[in-house]
Picture (spheres, helix red, strand yellow):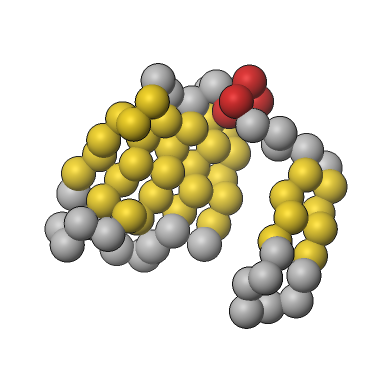
Length: 72
């Protein structure tokens, strides 16, 4: 999984898969879910991200890795 923030557009893209998306659905204003050909989610695009979520802290919890807290 990759988190890509683009400050010039205040957009956050959460890349969940290496597969190419073939369909995109806006589920809420400025929030788009991308799907692959099999209907699996490949990514989430959030426009005006700084107004919708807290970008200053990312907490990974209960993943099959070590717990990490990263603060900007």
